[in-house]
Image (cartoon, rainbow, N blue to C red):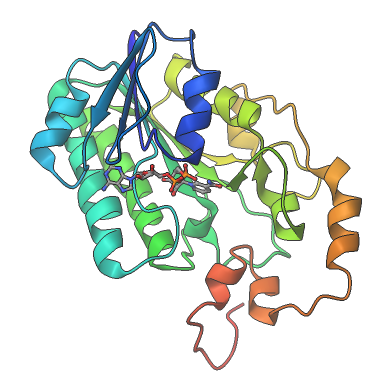
Length: 268
Ligand SMILES: NC(=O)c1ccc[n+]([C@@H]2O[C@H](COP(=O)([O-])OP(=O)(O)OC[C@H]3O[C@@H](n4cnc5c(N)ncnc54)[C@H](O)[C@@H]3O)[C@@H](O)[C@H]2O)c1
């Protein structure tokens, strides 16, 4: 990997990876639709809206691998999801195919499978159960990655990220948190592992309270260094006695499941 492109590089995860991957690859190309701070040594800056195919073709020219983070990162209107996460995603994969890019690490989400109940441990083979229009777009991203892997030979690591941050922020996040250093490790596996065709892994730290069987990530060599457990007592004490939405509490996707929920009975 000589030149690695990060889309959505101006966002929370992108800004973090910009630092943790600094010096790992000879050139980092940082792209977002919003301007990014001045380029440093061994960085290239690019401003592209991924809904614009012409601009996306220029964005991917000459890159060896892509970390695709750009797009809408939560629930939103269908029109915004469509532009950023469906059309934009297609543009990135299709332009990558035309440019001969061999490897893509992609940010999918726990919300692609958010309607699984918290009582169930799920692995990378379960069918999607999206909890939102956003979650549907992430399930679409996994399907499109599978197509481009099988039909065009691009290697994909789809990271179903739980919640990225320096520490877990509530009881739900105790089960799905990932630290910056653990996510950096997963991204590096996605770019550098010699044998990746199409893989789904959970982007979570080694959390004791995890809802995921992340054996596929471990098979690829992932050894998380962090666990949310040291934060648990303080978080649970702070939430004790709080009123909670029963739909949000029942499912892994939390409030994404409860928003706009109109079914008469909760699904199994
Ligand atoms: N942060 C998390 O905990 C988390 C959890 C699950 C999945 N993810 C996924 O990881 C990725 C990064 O998340 P984040 O927290 O850094 O999100 P973020 O919202 O902070 O960053 C996303 C970036 O994408 C850019 N963007 C949006 N639409 C674009 C477009 N049409 N063209 C070009 N750039 C566009 C935004 O300007 C922003 O800088 C997203 O795909 C998100 O869905 C994040």
